[in-house]
Length: 223
Image 1 (cartoon, rainbow, N blue to C red):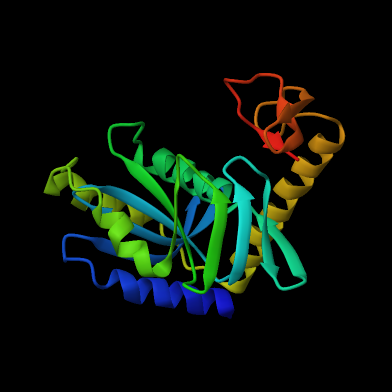
Image 2: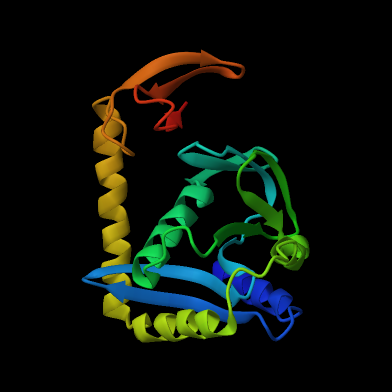
């Protein structure tokens, strides 16, 4: 319920955007038996924004390529899957159904509650508190698509929308657990879950970590 409430607050914030921004909320998309659930998609002349909302507060710790991030509230600590990687999966799904490679910018954004203090190491992605969400979207001002293309994208997303009943949602969640278990099995065997390369121990500025042997083509790391 906290997550849904945070999504609703993010949606209300995005209502501040002009009419040229078309907002989709809580999308459940299906293609060839594969499903994905996306909190928000915004289609504009300046790009397609894919927004993952997190209802956490307290300190948020994590890195761009980490598998998991950490929430800290006083002595309480909890881990959650890296929302940047989660959102990257949404972007790949959208590119597939929209048949877009790189011609149309698809910009992933992760948004946290205003009460979250973001202590994260992120250079190539957008992670903001809800208060700055519309600013993050409207920093993109170069027109990259004509109105006909924008309407085509909106129509395509509507065509792939499905009614998410309890059974479909349960199946979707089951698939998520299957993927997470696969990742765990690969890690336990020293295999990179991103590309299948070998994980090798390295030393960095913040201590030792495991990185993929296919670096720099694959930048997967884990503590």
